Image (cartoon, rainbow, N blue to C red):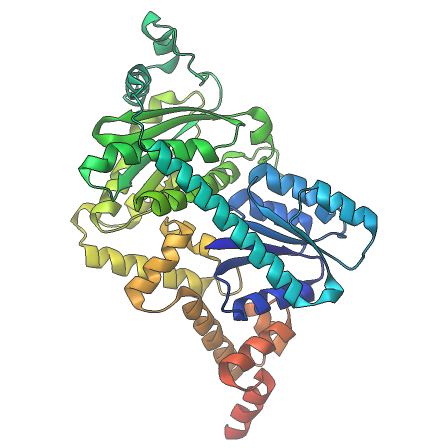
Length: 450
């Protein structure tokens, strides 16, 4: 499933396009929206983007300027520009930005559908090519970097990184992590292939991880005992600066961790397509001067990933903060049965949706709650309940709308806002599609019956 972000400073255009894409059964897309370049950039920092459909002329920052930021984070994202102007300079600049298409808003929806379909086909082709290359590489055995694995293993056990790196044994390694600067680690577990293919799977996961990791993050990959993968990572200062929050005392790591989860989502999706293997990830906190906590963080993350795997939960992505909270929320995760865990996860999903109808109920937001890969979350929910997650969300919005119309005197635009619709007209279209009558007609009929 590809993720499409629609950006325009006119909400009526954004909402209209979202509705049209959701109604078009030809597409299977996770559609997101933004009403400004700034809002679009926030989205790009917390989730991977595959296709961008953006207006060119917007206040503060144009769509042409936005593209530079989007491709910094997601270089494979396909770009489609919308505009009300057919000026040659815009077309020329759009082509320089490697846009896939440049569409006049006056042309209607069909050219947009065709452009998005073409973008999906290009993404499919890129994925096929990448997978073919990976299959070719899988025929070659890559010798394990024994010394690196040994060094990382010792660091994970709590030995001082700076002291270890001064040992003659490791002086030729050209280790890329500076123990005195901000760093963190990601650990991964692979579930799926038989033991005979596990070594190939691990090599391919490492390669996929390296392919998607930007050059702005230094990396030292390793394989620890029992086939557990660990990457020591160090983002450059310039990259971290992009995630600094507005408040002076705030930390950039929360925002950076969200960005890292987007990268790991790409790795998980490729490994599932290539290997039929489920890969789960744990993300540590910033180590900084606290490398002494690395063993505790490693054991906590490993414990969560193993317990979730034993309970039938695959393709997990969880950071250390949520791992600690996860252990606290579950009374005794070691004693839970698979059916209990399934019920707990479905309950968490449904509770989140019901409590956030007016806010963000995207796959990414819900997946963050239960620590799943967003694409896997959608399939998991359908498998466990027999119902599409989108259908469940829409049913809860409809239930809430009906309840508010029957039991409050709120205006329709206020009801629309309470269940997450940016405009009354968008809400009216949704309600009429679900019930066959408009909200006003429904409210009038209930008043007559009352």
